[in-house]
Image (cartoon, rainbow, N blue to C red; front, side, top):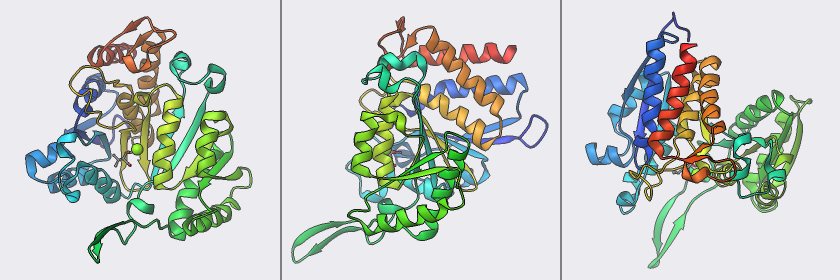
Length: 367
Ligand code: IPM
Ligand code: MG
């Protein structure tokens, strides 16, 4: 995409909980870019999750999927909330999230954990353990136990049984491994493949196939690690990792752990790629306990917009300017409550944090 070509069409899905609040500065940034004429952008909004169920009766309505089809990139806030926890399984907001990932074929979920130098003091880990941390979790997103069949709750002889199936085919493993090796090639050239091959057959195949794909990437080092050990190594010595590649469930768990290393889950963005259209979302959830209280950290959402420009619209310049605006505000000591600590000068709410980043970004556009 460039300023003269076809418009970049972005679908905005604020969703539930803190989603709409953290979207506010994103809308401001899109408006600023449109006004500056630096990119030809169009955007529209749609419902997903609990709010979609409230309005239309289902969490991922057909109208939303029609808008997905028109978009070059999708930006999502968060879904879910206690009001929806008692809904039947198919109407749960989480079904919409899994549904849209599957619909887009976005099989590769990139969850980078990078620490902003300004936030080293905000981590619960010692500074020497996490300073300069920069790792990337590559989570398989459209397979594994999240989607495997058979699944369900069955009743056998009056006893209920819950069933899920961990399953990975060779092509599914090979394509996610390739994403990891390609990324590592441009980074520090190390891939750690995480599995449970000492117990699970699906992991035995995973390990074997990752090893086969590795033959095409001799310049990248490959190591295999069991998931329990990986969970421990992440808090013991996280800087040993460059790219971690793993299945859907292990990736879900380890990416939350990796996020917390950087100070707060409220800081981390993610990109889900591999399909026709990329999906961008903060890795945090809808945080219903703080929704509407002006407490949420909007930075992960703002940084997700940067990823969208980088990976879907090929606008590294705008991605860099968004990240630069976040850095600028952090370096002034401005913090939301989740990242306060050493170096914080002023603790602000969602709105003020968003306004400040937007102001920095707008100033950079004017330059
Ligand atoms: C995530 C979330 C989702 C997941 C939930 C909300 C379905 O935890 O994006 O990590 O498990 O994938
Ligand atoms: Mg998760």
